[in-house]
Length: 217
Image (cartoon, rainbow, N blue to C red; front, side, top):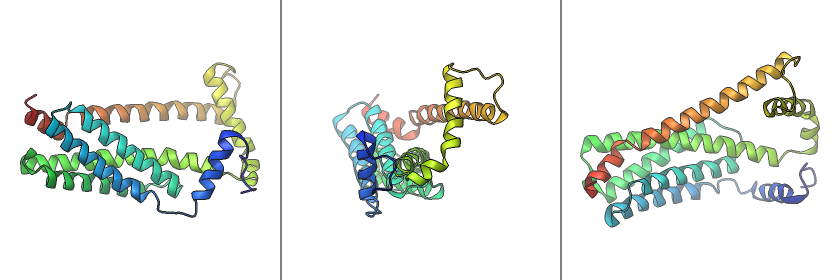
């Protein structure tokens, strides 16, 4: 562990913990199974106890995010295909188990629409959670040699941040700094827009409509 750049404070503790669990590859699979069980449990509880429809939706988003984040911390990366496939699997398995537990919740066509929507939403949420978690993992596990190589790159990012915060002026900066600044702004906009679309769409998909119909809402 002596080759880690972060050794002191809270970040150092997190880095040492991440290094200690690195050999235990595959531990995130348990969180994916737990996510499926927890999401189905939330849907079943709402349908039987007549709670708010938003409760299982929130549970779906939370557990899909947690499963994706633990996958990213476990596998590193960032990966693209792996998290998407896992997200589809979590959504599909959740829909299949939910159909087994609540077969009379909706008709065949509605169930098909529910399953497809849950798989797509789970894929997106799982992927983005895994993406940011894997970046965090790689940051914590950076070595002294890797840190030294990235000095110039971090200087550029620091300049971009200071310009964005108003501490420095954009005028007179190299083209690379200007491109990074606008790319960062565009990335934040796109991710925020996608997140709003996903949440707004999920609140009006057939699964929510079916539960509202069952509860008489």
